[in-house]
Image 1 (cartoon, rainbow, N blue to C red):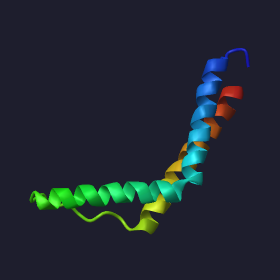
Image 2 (cartoon, rainbow, N blue to C red):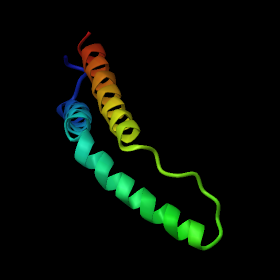
Image 3 (cartoon, rainbow, N blue to C red):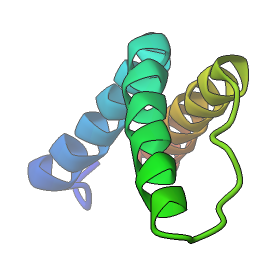
Length: 84
């Protein structure tokens, strides 16, 4: 515990909370980002740039939930290793 500084632990806990917040708010986050993606795809297609369509809402929700859980799990492992 002597090697672990308070500032380092604050950073790790902040990342853990960030991952949990992503997982908790994955639905509104996915809806917002999908709306932005659809706008960008429409603008690009108007200018002649062929882009694939945005993912489905279910795919986006699953993606952001998985990212949040991955970040939280990764940080829990890092915190555990810091105290080992």
